[in-house]
Image 1 (cartoon, helix red, strand yellow):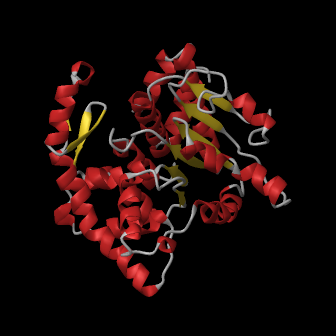
Image 2 (cartoon, one colour; image 1 turned 90 degrees about the horizontal axis):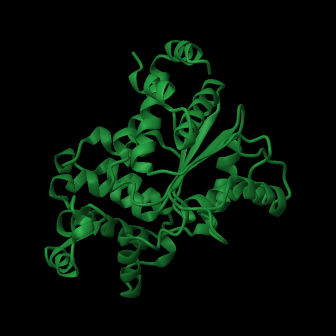
Image 3 (tube, one colour; image 1 turned 180 degrees about the horizontal axis):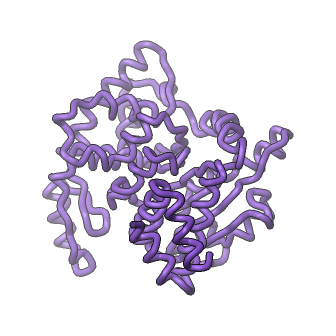
Amino acid sequence: MLPTLEFVLKNYKNFNARSTRDALLAYHRHIQAGGKMFWAVAGAMSSAQLGITLAPAIRAGLVHGLSVTGANLEESLFRLVAHKSYVDFPDYRYLTKKDDTKILEDRMRRVTDTSIPEDEAFRVVEKFIVPAWKRATDRNERHFWHEYFYELIQALPSNLHEGVTEDCWLLAAAKARLPIVVPGYEDSTFGNIFASHVKLGECSASIAKSGIEYMAAFYDQYRELSSGAGVGFFQIGGGIAGDFPICVVPSIKYDLEQPVRPWAYFCQISDSTTSYGSYSGATPNEKITWDKLTEDTPMFVIESDATIVAPLVLTALLEAKQDPSAADALIARYGF
């Protein structure tokens, strides 16, 4: 039984539903053909618990690389160590300024309808990662931002896991040694904390490799990912998490002046409306002019809430991965 896949095939006929269905089918066929998929994750998807479906998708070989914001990186870890201390605010639309001030005074940081607990999340992680930065400073070592988190999350004692371990996408990615880029990591809670220790002279800024070094390393990672049947690009939201890695193709072609294969697939889930000068709201066709995609690239835009769409797509893909022959029979039955 493949209930989620069948639900999509049976019900998703038009508008954003059609885009969701078609993007899902193209993703499935790309993986079946031996292709890989690179994910770009913006927004607050870790706080929204995307890991419930993203982590098993990583373990199942449906995700082969990631570009994430510094916030998504650390918030996956926060969900693991402080899950029981999160407080939800389902009526967040009706909160007053006084209500939000009370949340601040309670040492919580609200993200839409949920909130990250400062003491149980920030301060717990701080006890582990700041000493790692100081050790790197003493040893004159340099690492990419995500490598500090990869090391920490695998070394963290299991008795500190408040969340479901299997739902932590960062842990799944670390175990799979997935290539990750974290552009603009300075714009995150621990990016700020790191800056404070640099300012105080306790850590060297050089121990965290730069965004330029991320791109230089990503050149080689992209070549490896795009071998064989190619690598697709699955994007949630907009901003730097998507802008940074998708540029690797024209950069290799024009800046390195070396041959490169284009992205083999593109899908973006976004609630950003198409607007003047908005990259997040730009249609995929615009990317053709920047040589990031081609007119032959399968392209999909799903204008919807990623917290609804992404788990649906991943669940259907996991079903298809588990029983590909049943998935193909179901797809054929519905005429696709």
